[in-house]
Image (cartoon, rainbow, N blue to C red; front, side):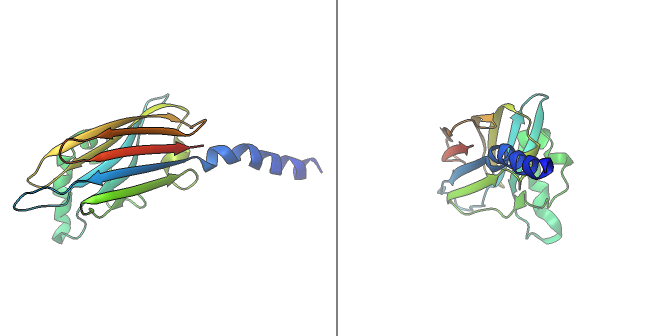
Length: 170
């Protein structure tokens, strides 16, 4: 009889942590250049106790012959040094194709993404973009995990990234 009461109670207590989610909007601005290449992009979290790096998304050209798109991954310099070089790409639920200019929304829901493995603490969310033969840019946003209430943060890039906004919900 006690087991039948304990299980629903544990589900209720674990529910808020598992339901926490992040919504990230990233603007890729159009650039007036002669030969435009869609940017490679990486999104990751750093911080927590103990300090950890969690990869959330990587966009790169997956259709190039003989995986030639992988050679440009090094241009995401900060991400590359923070563990990108150790990843075996493509990585399920993390890597995907590059995106055209516009506003793109990425959603990460607890229970289905690497967010489950995050220890409580203060993190920095990084968004880095780099283009073949183009520039590179990094934007940083603060994040307290798990969110106890709705959190919003935003920043703006100068060239390769436009507006970047983060919304965290408990």
